[in-house]
Length: 138
Length: 385
Image 1 (tube, rainbow over the protein chains, first blue to last red):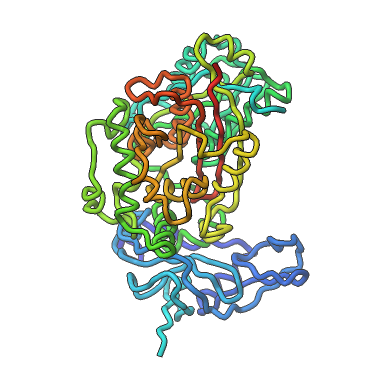
Image 2 (cartoon, each protein chain N blue to C red):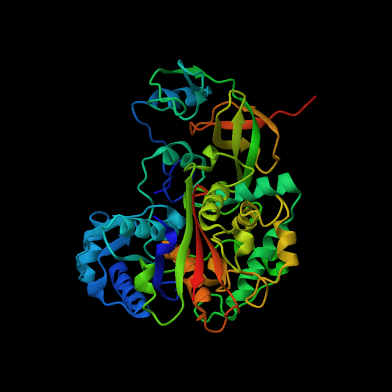
């Protein structure tokens, strides 16, 4: 049965746990939630039950700036899962955020980025995932 | 414990096949285990240790017991290794460690997989990579290795031709291996560059071909292995390093965990990659070979393609790289593909690599790589006698 994207193969949708529900709620509102350790100050993505650096359990969520730099990327022409075939080509990238953590996300428009580009969080899409756009100087 | 007190007594590999309908993983494990025992000159009753992989097709749980029962073994030591493409290399040193601990004397390490394209398996993951990456259209390994390659090209000014050369060399060596899926099918750099881009910058011919197959390695004491009239192959060093699961959490984009694993193995062995005549390097994608050559310290960062152009990597060269054709030339039988690098290194060091024997091979570096340059294991092997 076709899903919202028009593909005949259903997409693996968003999954959440009680700990990560707030993260995905924020994503749907165009906010990127990070965690900060109250003991050592380390910022991390994705949300965890402890600080992955010092193992303190005193971690709190905060709104990230949504700005970062492209560490690397790929323009996907043959998706690893058939549900994304009709959307190809599209660009995924690993982004290093100003606060330090890295995450994988989409960059729009597709096939228009290079390593080192500055990016910022774009307006949320209906699919609830994080999409970034390149900041063009001037 | 001294690694050199332990040796690889027997090896076997099933020729990779594109499909395997009608057979089971246990059947393949049975066949390849018997071949390895025959190669070692060891009776099943002498095998008292068993190490298997994490997903034997028919058996998600109780895997060692199921395999032991099928093979008629009653091991005093059994375990699972789950390190992706580094599983085979990871098994070898664990087998030696189990023997050193007195838990077994002769350990069978075995991996096999069936492949039926009609029944493609989708991972039932409910882990962070499923939650935070898959919804972006980032499924499978191609996209992740493409990002490793993209960064390498950006950092070093390397070219698509540099990446393509790795695939061409693998196919060249595969022409001496009748068991390779690409036997009889050499390729040129142009062929690689004209194949479709799967995920930029990687072309289809820079990606391994998934296959069915199996491989087995028997590890025992050096003393027992010395009863074999042939030369035996001793373990001299083993290094392991696991740094992340998803590439977004990589420790570094300038080096891979193989650098640490190889350095640890070299330190234990007292010799390094430059002292090995056989480089049996895990090669699921073109980019992995370039990164590994640099991680091994064989050349400066960004110069691995130059190193390849300088060196004849066939069995006639001073140093041979994946003389069986590697996984890029042979096909990748899931986790057994990684174990194939051990099988080939052992054959080369024993001097019985029919049709592709390198003369005077005494030392080998074998690498394993799981997930996306995440799980790294390196072994140093040396011929005795």
